[in-house]
Length: 237
Image 1 (cartoon, helix red, strand yellow):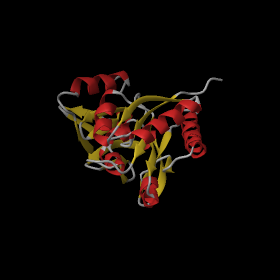
Image 2 (cartoon, one colour):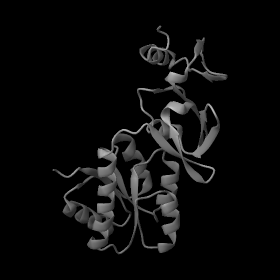
Image 3 (cartoon, one colour):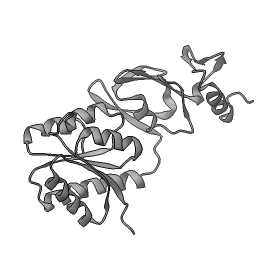
């Protein structure tokens, strides 16, 4: 079986270190470097034009650190941090990065991190489609069935997930949550709302009724939302 190819971008402000990481990546056989950046601002612009699976991201950079970038960029790719300072390790793992490389990076250590990324993406691409997701709320991970979700509401840096029994608040963006939900069942109705079309009980003007809840529909999305609901036969007997 052929290796699953992992596209990656190297962001490193030191030219020699950047060249070294590029050489290491080329030797793995499964990492394909699609871009190189000198700082996080260049990376920010590049990702808007050219998505990638994985970032090799330096932490200490001018203008914006790697950690600051990761906190500010919505739904970033998976990350392997590189840095000369070990004290950033805890922050890195709190941000759910795949690995943390301390400079100078040996090829053996680089390959260990690359193999960890390989296993992560291999599992992600071969896993059967689940009917649930895990949400971190109240200091624990909770399993939530897609069918139980009524709707999700953006609260700046958090998302409130409403089910028939409770409301769960998790640190995430609405966009990142929506990418984890099956598109055949969920639709964005407004910049701040994603709705389970199977839970809609009525439509009144630009408002969806979901039991006792009321969710707005943007005038720009209304036609798309109505078509999705009709296609899911909520209005058909």
